[in-house]
Structures are given as C-alpha cells and as structure tokens.
Image (cartoon, rainbow, N blue to C red; front, side, top):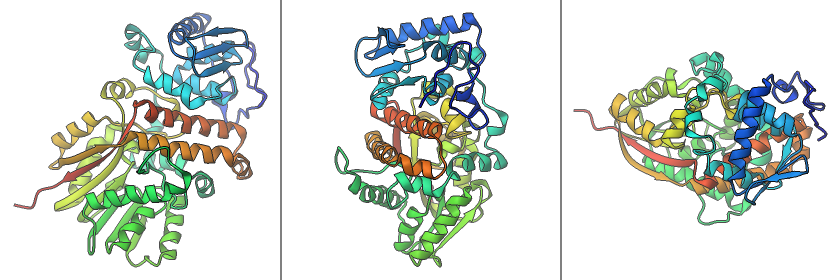
Length: 420
C-alpha cells in the first residue's frame, strides 16, 4: 500500500477521501499541539519494551515488538489532533506498520493506565474528540449503530467465522486452540449459557441479540420455545434461513425489534455480548427491561466483555477509534458498573460470575488469522485495502486487550425470586 503523507500534504495518496475521510486527510493541528504530542509519545514509547523505528533511522524504546513509523510527521500530527483515534487512523493510512501487531498492541494495553502522565489524563476532555449525538443508543440510533457493523455483509463474516457463525468468545478445553476445534468450543460456550439459564423442554426463552441464530437453534433442540430479537436485517434474514434449514421454524421466532419494545414474560433470558452495544446512558434501562421481561423464579444468562472500572470512567465521554470505525455507540462496562446497576435499579440478584478472557484472545487469534488468509476473498466482496487494514487493526487491538488482561469476558447468572 503506497501511502506516504508529507507534512504539507492534505490527503493520503491511495485512500479514497469520499469513503475514508479520516485516514485520507491529515487533520488540522497547531505546531505547538503536534510538538507536545510528539514529546509525550516519545517519552512514553522510550520507556516501554518496544522498538520504534522512525523513518528508518532513529530508534526509541527498550527493545521488543517493532513499530515501523514510516511517516513520523503525519503520525505525530494525527495524535496531536485526535489522540488515540489518530493513532488508529494513522495505521489505516499506512503511516506505520508492525510485523507483530498483536504483540505491539499488547504492550500498549498492559501500560494503558500510565502511558499518559496523571495530570494530563485529567485534561483528556479538553483535547479528546467528543462522541457525535447521532451515536446515542436511542431506539432509532441503536438501529443505525447496529446496522453500521452487522449489516456489512453476511458473506464477510462467513469468511472468518466458523460454520456456526458465532461472533462471540468461544470456550476451549486448552491452548493453543486449533481452528477445527472452534465450532465445538462455540457450542461449549452456548451450552454453558443455556445450562446457567436452565433452558430445557418447554422453556419460554427470550434471546436479546440473535447473531446468526446458533444459540436459538441450540436452545430449540433442547425443546425450548424461543423468541429472539435483533436490529440487524442481514442477521435476521440469514438466521431465519438457518432455523428453517434445521427444521425448527415452529419453535423459533426471529423479530427485528429493539429490546425495549419486547413484550411478555419469559422463564429465561440469554444475551451474549450485546450489553456492549447498549451504551452507558442506557444500561439502567437495559437491566430494568430484563427485570420486567423475566418471570419470577427465572434466570438470566449474560455474556459480557468488561474493562477496568477506572478506565471505563475515563472513557465515558470520549470518542474512540473503535466507536468511530467499528461499533458506533459502543461502550464496555466494568464489573463494578454492572453490579451497581443490577443492585440499585432492579430486583435481580447476581448469583454467579465467571471470567475467561484468555479464551477470547484465542478466539480472536483464529478469526484474525482466517481474515488475513482470505484477504483476496474479502477484496472480491468489495472491501478495499483500507477496510482490510481497519479490520486487521480491530481484530488485533481486541486480541491484545484480552491477551494483556486489560479486557475480560464474563458469563453472569442473574436470578429473580419467586412471586410473593
């Protein structure tokens, strides 16, 4: 990818500014702001176990995974203007490379809390981009946010997921995980959630977040009657096809519906990695909705990605690279935030919790490797090189978060007492 941005250039040569205006054009940033950003970045990288090569000449860092910054002027300018959002856009533009991207990003994740000096972290709101109002997870906003990611192309997801089309952490028996074992590991994860929720013959089950239907199929095969809701038209269409192919259309209903508009009472509710798309503003409403929909004596099994509470609080009002390019409106909760909302806003009780973050790192590794191997097929679907760099960065960034321990994934059991 020949993308060389000079300080005087306003556009990255091979990036279409109509499709990717962020990486295509260098943002405006004063010389002072750029100089301050460069000084801070140099100081932070100089103390880390990494090797950062600037324009093929100067090298900083304590040794470790290589970061090859081909255009330092553009790199520092982007960070000066947009912080970590600019860091990701610089990778999309081809201004820096890393032979071991996951290893490099893992070092950054391990040191996330100290990369920026404490006094400057308190000034984050003064320079970090603000989230656009259109990304709020209102009923209309949620539809658009979900569509941005999940309606890209069913064929795209099928290229790197396994045959179960399950887009959440698997549960392996051991590491390193082999690709052919991924379907069984996904079923192991699903079965564990269904066991937590005590789903069996005759259970009236609500699933919030259909995906492509694998959990609903697995639950129906146990004898449950399933209502599953999604905001993705692409997912709804393919899930319905898969459910019909399994001969379970009389036991599973797939609705295009916001979770807040679901009616009825259910013996059990399962929701897998959907809370991340709810938005912090709406977390209380999400759990209150679960409480409303669950019958007395019922169980809720959730799978949720979590982050440290202090980092969650620091990121609540900022606009991140992941939010701009991958999951508009997304926000990872902390375990503490979930506990506080469940205890303070609902009649539910957290009865069990189990984290298995390393399993997500392995799941993401398998997805990333398959995505890389099938780059030509991704291109044939109409996704350009900048998109492929963007998704490589997303998958690597996510894997690094779990591999470093910065992120975790948990299965939680919430219960509701019997009616008085």
